[in-house]
Image 1 (cartoon, rainbow, N blue to C red):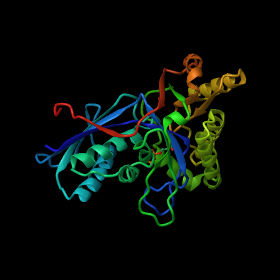
Image 2 (image 1 turned 90 degrees about the horizontal axis):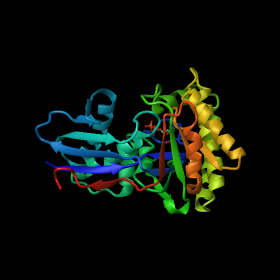
Image 3 (image 1 turned 120 degrees about the horizontal axis):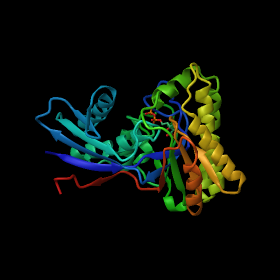
Image 4 (image 1 turned 135 degrees about the vertical axis):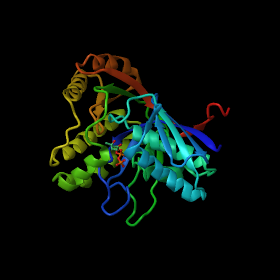
Length: 330
Ligand code: DP6
């Protein structure tokens, strides 16, 4: 049975993507820039099977139906169309970190699925083609195809394809990302729904879109210069502006919990004491704390003590999506 297994890591955006271009299919309204994180991994095996009548999605050992299954099937449909096959597939995927809680499992999930499905179907796409395929399922997944520091520009008017690109290897700016896990479980508003509501109802959305390219360029330049302080400061501003735009929606979108705010306060207190740390937050309650590797142990100790923090995951720049041998097929 044609089968392939791929691994991919989540990425954390330093310059956030929030908002889709009007009238285009899953095209971002703002440029984004992320770092792909090792230490958290999604592993996905795709097996095309002539005995299956429908695609089957097994996530962490549990068969899923509904929207997650439909999104996975939609990607398989694109792969089948390109490969000229009609076979249905079994998708088995597992992540070693909390899913759907603002830890960007959709990014690692769709990046791994794009690669595993393409190869199982006998295709050999370029990284750019894979990134474009992943983007059509989830915009941030386009970035997880690449390792290190990765950008996703806004497409030219009328473009039908868009892929992410490498900005710099992880070694250009050594970085530790501490994920402060504040609450397990499903988030209440998905990124897609949250940004659609922001686009429709937030009076701050146009200001966000107008300002984001400038922040993106600042962060990009600072990464290339290896300037941790400039990257950290601008990344924190990008995250807070994204959340400010979302908060101003109607009804308001509040991804934060008390623990989220407590971690932000702890990060600010560390800075005022001379220990450099910066915070970034996605569409969930967790805070990702950016710090220099030499300060990571001290910063982690302080963050772990914050009431409401259930645990911390320590990560650093990692590799892009890649194939591994399928178990039982070695
Ligand atoms: C806050 O890529 O999950 O993490 O394209 O609708 O699937 P869809 O959204 P998604 O949004 C991620 C938003 C973010 C910021 C970012 O990763 O840039």
